[in-house]
Length: 98
Image (cartoon, rainbow, N blue to C red; front, side, top):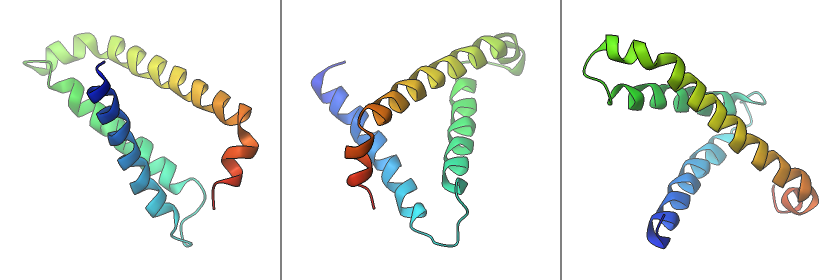
């Protein structure tokens, strides 16, 4: 990835996190509500995005399991890396959050 593409990648991610953080300020929301909405939206988006690579539902159906495997493996890798980072830097991260 070029430096510009890399910067844009992280900027898009930061903008999405800002939206989630804005919703987290709502005192009436139950713990985990924003995370659940975020995951739902990501899954819905990825299902739509996946569909754009096919001409018909039969093609998509034939690749369904492979797509599920890809997305769940990637999510697991990213989540594990971010959890490890938070564990390693727990005191610093928590001290900078409201």
